[in-house]
Amino acid sequence: MKITAKIHLRPTPEQAAALLGTLLEANAACNALAQYAFEHKVFKQYDLHKAQYYNLKETFRLSSQLIIRCLSKVADSYKLDKENQRTFRATGGIAYDARILSINPAKSIASIWTVDGRLKIPYTTNAHNQRLLAFQKGESDLVLVKGKYFLLLTCDIPDENTDEFDDVLGVDLGIVSIATDSDGQTFSGAKVEAARQWYAKRRGVLQSVGTKSAKRSLKKLSGKQKRFQRDTNHVISKSLVVKAKATSRAISMENLKGISKQVRKEAKRLRQPQRAKHSNWSFDQLKQFVGYKCQLYGVVLTTIDPRNTSRTCHVCGHCAKANRRSQAEFVCRSCFHSDSADVNAAKNIKLLGRQSTGLWSRSFTFQGQAPRFSRG
Image: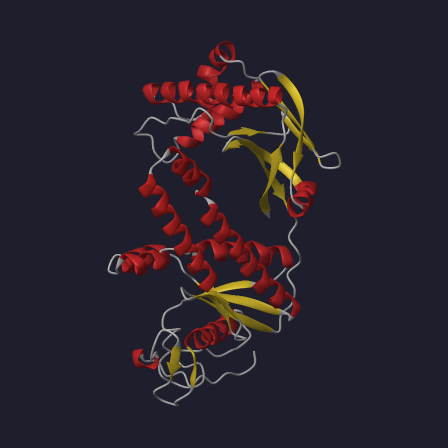
């Protein structure tokens, strides 16, 4: 499994100038190449290499291997759309491979090619990324973010052997509670909503002031909410996967393909405060984090059709819209079982996960019939 490790380069002023010069030179080459490709309708990397390699070599101060990476970057950019000419930011990220970049994790030094020659630049990173560097393999990207240089390195992590499992942990995703599992554990969205409101209010105040100082503060504020949400998704996903691993269970989640579009469509009908709340969270990111952590820990992940999981009683199988008395409360109109709406949905997801993984031989259907299972 491929995971990206991020390290922060700590160059001297002279080294930073060399890195900046390399970014500017490489992206200038990419723009020249993109113009040629568009004008001559030459989009394949092999054809571009044949037509422009020596011209790029004479025009730009780039090594042969970095020119090849630029050729690849331009060719990839035209794969989806050949009707519009591609352009690249002057300081956009550029790719490196093992011939022009190497990492020494023991000494925390990156050896990287620049327009001023090969440089050895110290770097810092956290313990998690440092462990990943032992598996560094393939291409890496040099990026400039708010005046700081980072390397994004591809690490090929060997997958854990998938463990045998005895049951399934169902996970329901939502707005008020970001995630609820079938054990009844809830990951509340209250802190997330409070943070969203604070950032929104702060941005509004700074935008209304409009001074240079306020604009500098706005620039510092940008990305903080996104990083906070990303960290929260990491914490939730790890907690779910570690629990499943410790209790020999698979994880079952809803197949939420297209949910972002549905949420945006629903949000348009709401007033501004509710609209921001509904479109605020990234369910897809949380599911991706759960997915790759399952691979790391050797936990089986299965996805199920989410239809009617919130309207069906997990005890008797009765399905009706009226079962959902409110956003938080579920009361079955047939057997009068009551539960948290999110917990009831998570338990339905668990039952469907059992079915999809073959733990139960009979299907569980949401047709108002009591589910009767026999061990498979």
